[in-house]
Image (cartoon, rainbow, N blue to C red):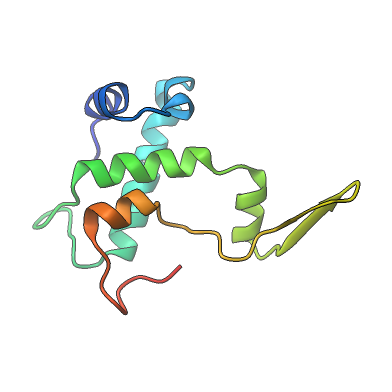
Length: 115
């Protein structure tokens, strides 16, 4: 399980736009870390918690990515393609499940990851 104290230090010292992380309570931060770790182990199957753990920075960045998702992004994961309100329209094709920072940290092999 990702360490909350190490994540707090990482976001305080290394992430410029860290408001989503810094303004929530620790219980939500820990859930975000747990969810991020679970997602990444499911997608990047060449990593295993017992033998080849994910780099903690990847888990931290994915947790922040999850916290930044608004209601529109969550709806797109459930199949909604567009939302219109009072003439304003948002198209949600191609929303990424995995943070671009995670891809930069872990790398991406063809056939190993798809949005």
